[in-house]
Length: 215
Image (cartoon, rainbow, N blue to C red; front, side):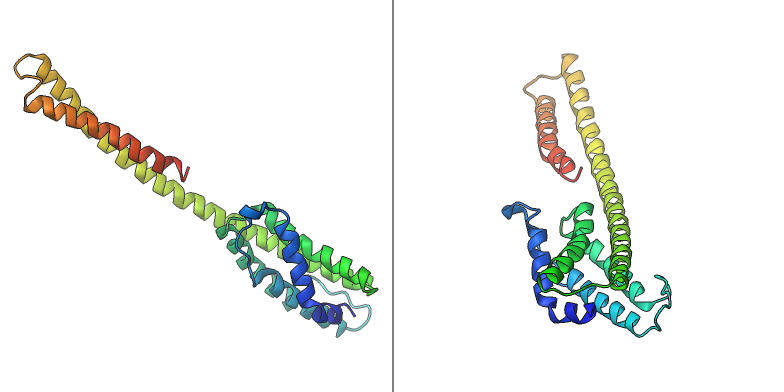
């Protein structure tokens, strides 16, 4: 039975999934591993397969009423948000669960473990539920992150704009006073103009990189 096969080969399946995921990145770009996403899904898949074995033959099991897909969906949602936090892309979310199907069928073929049509339907249904919830959670978490960054960026731009305007006004008024000839360039007004221009340069050099980075 597939659920017994998965349970007895759990460690081997997890290792293969991790190896497949690592191959999609350059060695220096591999994000931190997640130890609860796919391993938990495999255990929930075992539970779902075992549950269906207790149903009378011929009984059709819908995806939603059974508790296993619900738990799979909740765990997948957490997994999706965690992948975003660690720097994965939404493609990686889909590939992570696709790897499970691939390694299960590969290992089953190597071990001559037959997979019935019903077991394969359960596997696909659980994967479908997990992918849908993980991608949805990933997208929701990403939108929150984008919104937070937008608020931060807006605040930084506002501060930059206000400070830039203040220093520009000082520079213009200082220059206007010097232009009238009533004050000298080497006096206090001239010094104020120089300081304003220096602060403008420093403001730009300091602030613009900070704004560009999150953008």
